Image 1 (cartoon, rainbow, N blue to C red):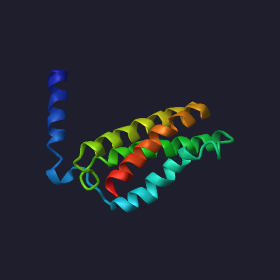
Image 2 (cartoon, rainbow, N blue to C red):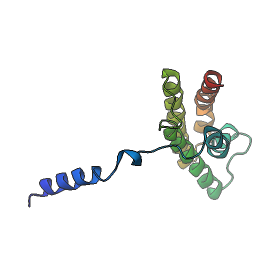
Image 3 (cartoon, rainbow, N blue to C red):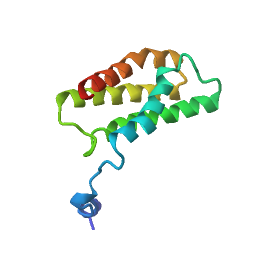
Length: 133
């Protein structure tokens, strides 16, 4: 069998395994997502100048938190969390982009870069809270 045909068949059969109800959906409510995941992980970035990582283990913990924050931004785009407004999309993408940059900075142990992106992350949070509360 041609290897390209094989991969095409695998791809087609894999996508048909997901039923419509298998699409990503919110598990918790917005409050739980914010207080249990987004707030603690964003605080690690917001307060990094106050509590800078002091060793490799602390940098690794910060790296994990910034990755969680970036992935949490993706969660804000799934049914159950997503709001159908341009402002929501704009703020969520800004949060995700700032979080990805924070993750890269944490991986590089770059405290200055983390402090520089703080404003973008804060802006995404503040704009969203102003628009949705």
